[in-house]
Length: 510
Image (cartoon, rainbow, N blue to C red):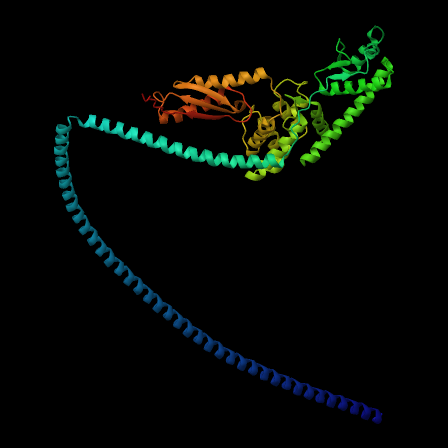
């Protein structure tokens, strides 16, 4: 029991001692933590005080810098204001000086104006005295003298102007003629075409008179078959060993000619055979037309044309105008127009194409009413040919007024090709009528004594009466006759008009 009490007492004492020890340990730890916290607080306070001092110093420095900048800006502004005030003051002084100078000038001008007015009045008085004296001496009033002087000056001016215009026109004509001759000569030399007139083959030679009967056939059935198949009229008359073919269409006439020659050579002439031979001849001619069109386009240097248009060009091979082959004429126009275009700086390609196509309307003019130039233009529009090429075709006979250089060149080339010696046949009656009409135009003017047409109507020389036509009137008469010829006559190429005025003095020695 005592041991138990002793053990319990020892345990109680041990617990009290452990409690006291723990209490003292905790208290010691709390005091240490408190001490550390106080140290941290003091450190933070010290750092805050330091930061505060630095911020205060920076604020003071910034305030000092701002104040200095503001004072510097204020000083600069005051200096700028002073400079402006000085400039304004200088300008005011300059304006005052200028104003004074202007006032002095106005005063001087007023004085001079008064002096000029006095001088003007004095001059008018002296002028009036001189005019009255001149009127007394001449016996004419001022109005009469003015009219007489104006008439004299006008007459002198008219004569001088007429002389000057004549000299300028003469020089211009000489230069233009020289230049034109050179260009045309170059073009013609470069286009050395054969001067040969082809004619339509409307007569077919036959080997004997018996052939006529075979062509006619029993009760005329063969000739009817030929006419029906070809669309051509066969005229069989008393002409020995010849049959005449008649048709408005040259291609049909060529088909009939070829077919008839084949039938005669073969000897078998009957309706069935006629149809076969005509069909074969038509195929040959169609092929020939296309080949001729392609050949012409190649020779002219024109490419890219529609196939049907090339075929239409080939139809011109059998078309003649005044005895001139139209296809050959079209090639010549293409060459001539291109050559002249190269000389004057125009579009050579347009002239080539328009020259080749300018008479394309003649291939179908028997099918459509109207001038061939306009027919050709309408035909070209269907093949989407550009307007710059269509226009020269329209205008080459002046149904449409030419608007481009190329149009004038194509028209000139057309006239050159048609006017070449031997290019076209002309009947004697038409030739004589044209010569007489040319002379009648000249004789219709006052003062003309005689007129002579020369060089196949390409020149006319006119003799005038010198007592009725003076030198200036002769020049005007020449222009009037040229204008009358251009307005009233149709002629190829150009006509030279020469007015001759001469004074003859005749006496006899006895």
